[in-house]
Image (cartoon, rainbow, N blue to C red):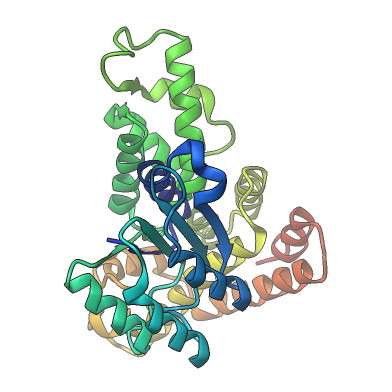
Amino acid sequence: MPIHLFWGDDAAARDHAIETLIGDVVDQAWNSINLSRLDGADAGQASQALTEARTPPFGSGGRLVLLQRSPFCNACPSELANRFEDVLDLIPETSHLVLCNPNKPDGRLRTTKALQKLVKLKQASEKSFLLPAIWDGAGQQELVERTARDLGLQLEPEATTALVEAIGNDSTRLNAELQKLALHAEIRQENATANQSPTLIKAENVAALIEGMATNALQVGDSLLAGHAGEAIARLDALLDAGEPALRIVATLTGQIRGWLWVSLLEQQGERDVNVIAKAAGIGNPKRIYVMRKQLQGRPPQRFLTLLSRLLEVEAALKRGAIPTDAFRDGLLSTP
């Protein structure tokens, strides 16, 4: 299958799949000639990818053309779409065109329809790499376990739980921390058969190596909801120290608090249907509404409006260039 469509927001898993495919297709001795890495945000490079994909490899092994931020299934210009459709049947079996984009392919585009037709005919492949929602504990646990398997590691159940609490759905950090944990476990010789079976990661390994507070942006929101501003700031500091982008924290908190506001307002109006509430609040799992009702009991909608207003101040400060720690302190410490 010479065409591969990889999409989704799990960058670490997506990159791992790409590197695995490169290792399977391209002969390392001919890497500099037969491997191209291009950026589809540049129309010229997107067009170049189509030209290179038509070229058979030199030497041994195959050719692989990697196009990050591929436009072909997401807002593809008409001229580029025409070129893409013309090239589909011209790619040699020994050449591989890998199209990557964090966004889901737009099924309305004719380029997407053409690719999906090839996928059905098994002449192309499509694979999604989606991160679990930050509130999806089961999904995050599956992410940890899958990443560990990909790295040839074995986790104790307690270690999996500790990693979920410490890292959440940050797949890039998870991948890096698991690699450090594997090295740590081997150095301490805590797995006597490290060379014959997967390295075993224990909960104490996680506690010893992963620094900082086990936190995520939703826990920051919980602290703000409870009125514990100091605890919220401490958790924010831990997230920022771990490299979490400040604006992404703001976006997560805004979505969380906006959901609370909708639930609170609809509850106040007497709405009891959890499906109606979940749809209005943008919550995928209606069962969460039962938990949120208990969590929000006794808290008026004005509380959430105030929090949203403070977060807007934080976002404005960040976009003006304020230091993230200062922006959060100035915006949130005065929250009632």
